[in-house]
Image (spheres, rainbow, N blue to C red):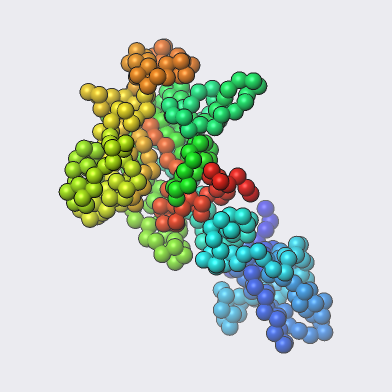
Length: 437
């Protein structure tokens, strides 16, 4: 593309150029007019003197509205008196490429002036806020750095189907479809197909794709559709090995984000990007229960025994922060009743962990049961033998030991920037009460 981005304007001082962008502000004074134009990389001032030569331009500016889009042809000059980047564009021509209505339905520059639901109704305007712009730049860096790390470690990218014949997470929280007079479901995760890739000898795979959960939850961290970064790899012999890999992935990605956007994140979100140290703390679930009861007088409610809930996650983070000065903690040794049937077990204990970051679960990682007979028994134990018959077939013909995990990209962004909910960190949020815009 030939568009000149505003971050590169220093390379064009003294030259006649063409720039395009949104009108950020207009000042129409007695003898001079100023327009500030913005693009995704910055802002620049356009200065138009009021005189006979500029009559046409003066009329255009006097009728111009903020948030319109314009193309400006002119010469770029350095000017120490200009507060905005010490430069200004003196135009020969201004072309209005689209005109904004006189009054916006919300003030996107002041997020606190509208409720989150009003902002989502006008998401196309809300996205213009500089915090949102930075947020999606950071999210792009996050995905790219994770992708870069796994590719550098010889992973293969796959694209699994999102219309499937059986629920992939052994739960009822699936969206059912009428698929040519047959039942089908939207995939909760690519779990079965990641494992099929292991049976196929691909050894290391990843995918970045949407996942769907029919959870009738309106909590700050749940959505019915979200973006998942999935990992699966063969010849993993221990849970420690898998946790070590995820530690390295996070350290690599957060380092990249801090290097590129750390200062901007601090300025706009008042958040320091902390690079974690290895190893991340690890605590067995039963031990954690005892710690939380002793330290905070917290006792897990009956239905969640053998698992974690949001309150225990927050307290686990508080304890780890106080005792270790760390933002991350792995919780291990969950109850088999609370884990998926495909998790490998040793002495009845699932070989998996939840990774908690800033008081919120961001990963369930686990070794998978790859031995056909044992896997069949565990599926039968959960009452799933018939539902996952096609999946069990993968393991009849040899499959290496393997394990993996998934990361919710939107949730990680929320925790990284410490926003209030997923509604802010998803490009377009989907929840039980929202399917528009």
